[in-house]
Image (cartoon, rainbow, N blue to C red):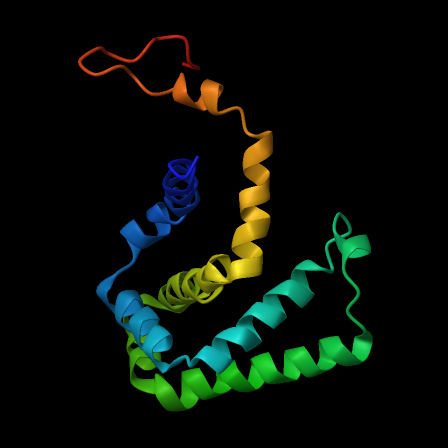
Length: 160
């Protein structure tokens, strides 16, 4: 059962790989600056903002209650954090990314930073237990059928 966590982690991280592969040195420098300048308290602000923003999606809105006042406060805190990171902590990498890569470099850096900021969520014990509850509904036998036997090529029954 514990072997499924690395597999799920690998699958989740695979979606991030194309953006990281395209990241240039300026976007990478900026994302590293953002990561190093973000404190654990800042990371909680990002998590709260992400949650409150995702709660606006009609498919999940009924599952979360974020008041207008809470949303305004969360947006204010996140806005202050981003302003501080961009203008104070990482101004030089921001300027370089904009100069040499335009807004795409900054967007790429923020995508990497956002993934990093939210990744800490899965290590929180309550969240980890909640994610573990999913395992009872995964057919491990079917997943194992996707792995080729040692020395044999994979079966050719997949999509072309």
